[in-house]
Figure 1 (cartoon, rainbow, N blue to C red):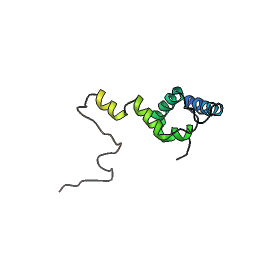
Figure 2: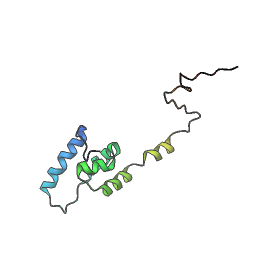
Figure 3: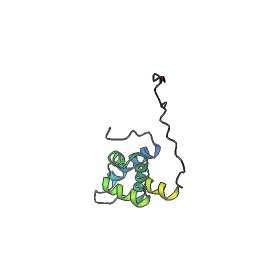
Figure 4: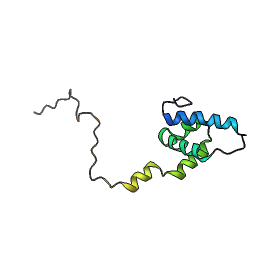
Length: 106
């Protein structure tokens, strides 16, 4: 697994370019504003917390806390908003029996 994400997403590329520029103009003790954290949270929801934290050089734990504070987990959202299914068909793309199998009855 690569340590950073390819900068194919426009928002990821914009955030990745803005953070180093912001960091170069501020002392290290100044906190990052909310806007980059919000953008990083959106990206973490799309690509995963660890990958975005590495790509943007952010603290994994802080990003995870911000993501959890802004959105509930997809599993919680799915359970709370959707109705249970009466029937779920699972199609694995396989026939029930291999074509070479032949039953002979005597």
